[in-house]
Length: 157
Image (cartoon, rainbow, N blue to C red; front, side, top):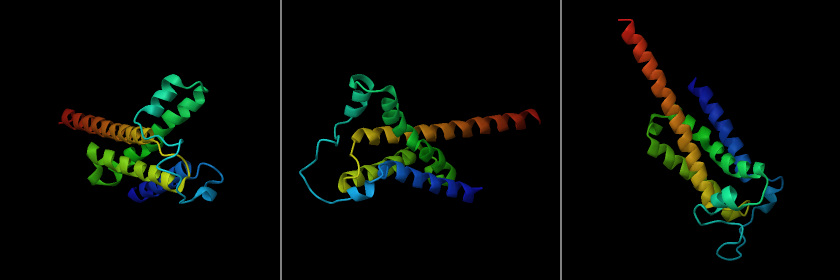
């Protein structure tokens, strides 16, 4: 069972890398280490700037809003869900939050350094939120299962 879960997790990580780093067909051709200043206009270093823009200010299609906000959350939901199943090290919420934030930060820095997307601090926030929601859902499921099995044992005595 654990081997299957590891294989599914690896497949998920490959899909996540493709979706985050190689979402554009010509992403490989954009790999560059050129320097044009401290940052350019497509990066966001101000927390909640993009989130507020998509929620309240953007005059764009609803689907684009959902893809940008909900997509970042749901993309990392499986990460927070599966980590506690794979290792006892990730049974605590702070460990899952740190691991999710670390993976998201890695993706964002790779986009910044190699110019294959845009660094957005709000992606870090949303991705970490997604990992935490995944953790909370598996934690809740485990509690419900444990509670149900515990009650069944008590009533049969």
